[in-house]
Image 1 (spheres, rainbow, N blue to C red):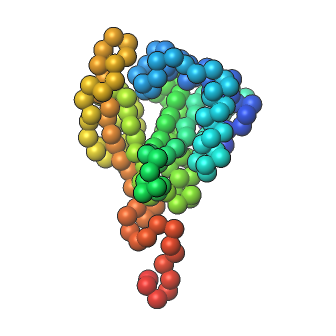
Image 2 (tube, helix red, strand yellow; image 1 turned 180 degrees about the vertical axis):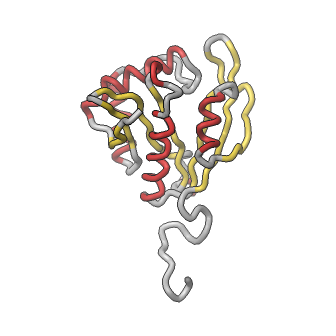
Length: 182
């Protein structure tokens, strides 16, 4: 797969909405039950971009194969250097490297923006592909929260994975080291 990874644009929303709709209705990556419409997807995207978070797409020959974004891990100010990743890939292209390309680019962009930790919250402990993808890109298992979601007639776990970004917990975020302290 030779998809181009680029920032999302408003023109991508119909395909983003369709990819997410399939994930909501058929999968466990999202604990959402009813898929949002295009207007709601636009609102969510705009809110993330407006808050300074990256929102990327994988495109080839005009087709969007998947998308990934980072958002706040939690709303309290102390979490401001920690992001949560989300990745969705078109169902016919899962397992072909699109997710890896998206997550790699997302990690890079979050490091460039100065974030220090990335959390992967994987819906369902049987999502071995997503768990393996995160592990292959340096995420460590931070724990499993058992039976916290009920979807598709069964209880679902959440697997929490964590990856250091940039200098991680070295130094004070947002403060450049001076020559005197280096």
